[in-house]
Length: 426
Image: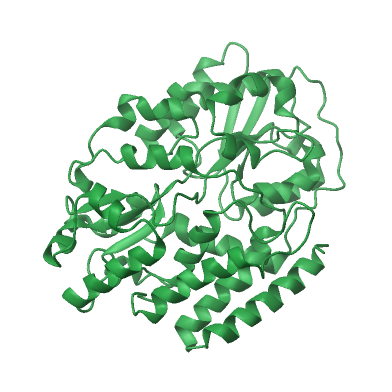
């Protein structure tokens, strides 16, 4: 198995930088015909929603609406952007937007319906506030209904920790690895006891999570570039620290599949990364555990459903997405497709509270649930992903070409400023 969602997240960063960033949805017709249409269309991509729950929605609403769903392959954002720009009847009535793309659609929020006008405001307390706000304009317009999230954690081989004479119980590991420096100190002991083992797959994984642990990123609310400030430098230094200590496996390709669970004994990643590990290293079943992310929780991934303004029946479309993403159906989606819900109520449901055999019978929701609720509310600017790209690229240059870290930092900041200026950032 490839690094599906992780790989996509990294690719999304570079794609955003190359293609420019905020989404232009101008042009096209606004006509959506009448607003009591009986035939509605739904666009999403494979794995974004539970196909089973979508099928049940078609049955549930069939007396009022014929819902036709399409799983869109390829570059979903590009196809959606092109279709929105063209306008007309080809625009889907309901569409997904990936979490890493939602900020780039906010400058064109007028292309979407305000879900608060349709009833979201009354039920918003059922969903995580930090997730909801990321799909909200400065004046409070809500364009996205949260589908899922990716709370992060530390995955580790408990048997390897025991072999190295280190704590292996999740609570004890969490206590020993509260900060990134604590984690790297633990990793140094592990590497000393078990030569040839590594703590992280690459520096980008540390950098992206460390950035996500804060409340600010590369651009502030006043549209100023802040990618050269202390909070980004601290995230950068955490990544460099792992590299200089020899804890970085420097894996930026598919060789991760062969390394995980063998030379690579820990991973920091989102809840969905558990499936990546399980698929790549099935023989290590029962030997892994999960505990809190060093430095605090962050989010990776997670998406939204939106209603383009051309939607032919906003009230019924909202009822459909409200039904698909209800806490009860989110539990079904987790069971069917491992989609981690944005509704905390679901975390206490049987679908999520059982032991996980791959993790030695650990109830991993006891780690991911609190992490999900503790993720800080942060601001993400439309151009943030694009501005982040040079930092990721320069970290890879250090690993692949031996570039000096200080030179890489200067080049990353310089390139990021150029991209920011092209996006109208001060």
